[in-house]
Image 1: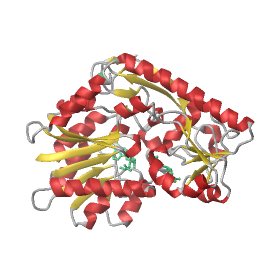
Image 2: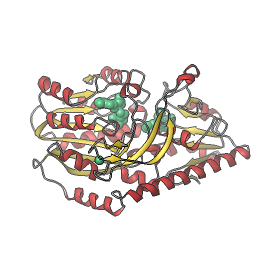
Image 3: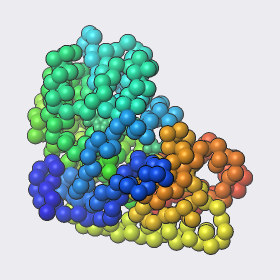
Image 4: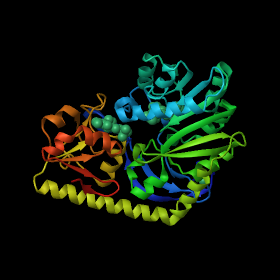
Length: 406
Ligand code: SAH
Ligand code: TMP
Ligand code: ZN
């Protein structure tokens, strides 16, 4: 039996997705032969509340010099991170010469706002190609995996930080104890850590099981995050729900007793109890919902194929790897996936090997149906793709339910 990565209690899977490739493992035909797979099973720890993968691929397999995810591909996310940075700048950097550290700073989408305001900052980003983009923008970045040792080195070199930021990366990290210890070392006595990740409550309520893939080791809740940080003398002082990535939660953390705890922390914990996030049966129900979502999506795609309709995927997201391979979507059902990221174009999707083509091919020859794999960017995409819809094109979505949009 596996043990919980957070509290070491024994833990069993509530869903088994089978052998999965890496979510961002877009590849060329000559690599098909030795494509890497890992057993993707998810468990819920009833002792500490953490939902987690039971097996993780080595981190160097996922985060490296050819990492395929560039944060800057979404205009909406750039705007989101500007607002995040503004919140930090106006309310969390009281003293002179403040210092901000970001873990998983990627191409600098967040830190560029601090750099533009002349604020002392440091990005820690192990994937060399994306880190290089940030460095070229003038953002101070070190190419490394953050952990407690790196935190000690940063303090020795730059002093403690006023703010430690992280977006869509805390949940990636199986060795989370070392990260949380590092945050405790790094933060000034009244400093704050602010991080956001896809929220367990949204995943359960929307059956958005595509948030589960190799990079997402954990799905956090306020309850599980509180448990974890309390072990290191810190506490959650605020929680702020976000609409990004299909429903995320921003957690604000401080050293215990250093700053006031806002009332919505308790309110959100109560809400988690109300929707049953602490109960094993919630996760059995979630599994049944995933199975039924899969049946509906496959029935729809098979029906469209039998009627001779063309279906193209929109957005070669890492999340889509779970949908495609769990449902069994093959290139005869989805002709290709359109994506704007050059590093993905000309490659094939992990596992099912559906071709990934430049966005222009979608525009030049609209399909009958577009399967919205990038559903978390739905507003930005609907606005941009008005002419597809006006020309009679239809969108297929699968969150919160499988449906054809009118
Ligand atoms: N913050 C960005 C990027 C999220 S993708 C955004 O929200 O858009 C996750 C990033 O975290 C990747 O760029 C990956 O290389 C990086 N990462 C993974 N493990 C890390 C670690 N231990 N320390 C710092 N960065 C890490
Ligand atoms: P994400 O869901 O992990 O943010 O990844 C989004 C992917 O979708 C990324 O590969 C870029 C692609 N994309 C498009 O192709 N067109 C778009 O309009 C948007 C917003 C994203
Ligand atoms: Zn646990």
